[in-house]
Length: 291
Length: 329
Image (tube, rainbow over all chains, first blue to last red; front, top):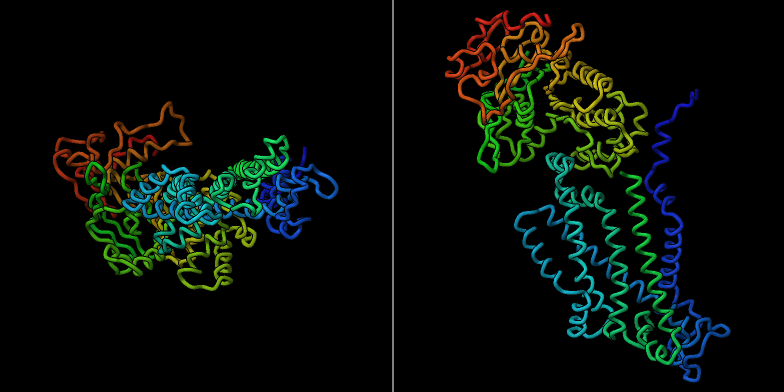
């Protein structure tokens, strides 16, 4: 018979959520992290590292395939595709991140405020969000482009506002549940203020849901922003952007030279897939650890 | 013994969808400095509501009449900072520790938050105090425990953390609302021993709410028995078992399982427990009482002194000594 006694403290230490969570995300999780890291690197350093000027056009190279240091060849206007992909990562990835961040910030604030104050405030804000739900993000972005002129900023803000009800609705449920917990009531009767309870107690308890919402929205935002740029209402050509590149590649595609559009689409799909896989993995593994 | 807490004719009505519902009727009790008072009764008899009224934790819309006096101050009139101060002096420990602690924050955050934020105690000192309190409730290696999360601690351990946290505000009265009900028997014994020690070391008064007559008898000086929102008997805790004054207390005593005798079935009280708002007029226990007379149902019973205890039964003197049919005595 074994006389080994398990040390409860050592066991507890080993189960520290963050460490175990990372070890459980699996191969797909790690591949996703690699893709996201690469995308972020490109977004930050791409415009510095790119081998050629993304806007240098030489029509004699139009639709010429990869050779030498031009690993992805040239587009229909004779511009280096690899350089444009690297240059375009900034607006595409950071733009989507910006949209997701703002949408999550607005949504979380509204969710916690409605859950906390309840009553008429909750009813009127929720009704307002229902109205906002009726507008598809792209439609709002088109309206914003019409009013403020086409630019990444107006499209991004419009999308962020259009997404915020989704975040608010999901988080409001979680915040309401947390609001009703006894520990919140116990802190309330001790005299802690609403701000402290919301920020220090309620918010951390719904943080995993906030991260999950953020990753989902990032994916949506990237696809929608690319679509808006494709329509010519977001990032303006000749500025390099993956959405713009899909659009620019159309003519080459029709001429039997698909590499421009295809590269940009693959980049978009890879990053969106990586983010949503990672979000799903993190969510699942945090449930494993905590439940 | 001077009274630290005096409750007089406390009546509480809660606001329900169907209208106001009475949950406590005319409850009076005293707790002396350093005294442990037990409060027993079936579910819905108003035990927890009494504790909540004392700590001013009743839900919104509750109507309270009567008086609650703590150390000379009228508790029911308190508001603002004075109310917060009262709640610091009257600590409450509830049944389910896990529901009362934020699951995503460390034990040290939970224990020191009130000191640091509300009392402006420097962090290092607050943590030192927390560690000392944990030590006082018999937790080994407080430094390590403080760094852990609630889910890493067992229920008994967490309940001790709760008690330790309650001690940090240096309370004079501890309301223990079924604080050992969710624990297994061994842990329960440990927690009870801790409470008993604290009471002796710190001169802490205690209102100990439980379903468990034995437990109340073991740690309390006096025990109140509640039925349908009323106190029906208050006696010395040691005496309640052998010599109950009220037929309801006697029925409770007889319903306990006894380790020394074999029984086919446990004795049960016929009928079901009622809440204050649905209680009949006259004696509230009369419909279930084997000794009830027609007069019991028609006249409201009042608390009267009898043999050093207080009892709410018109026939208490007649029934004296005949309430237990010998099953356990």
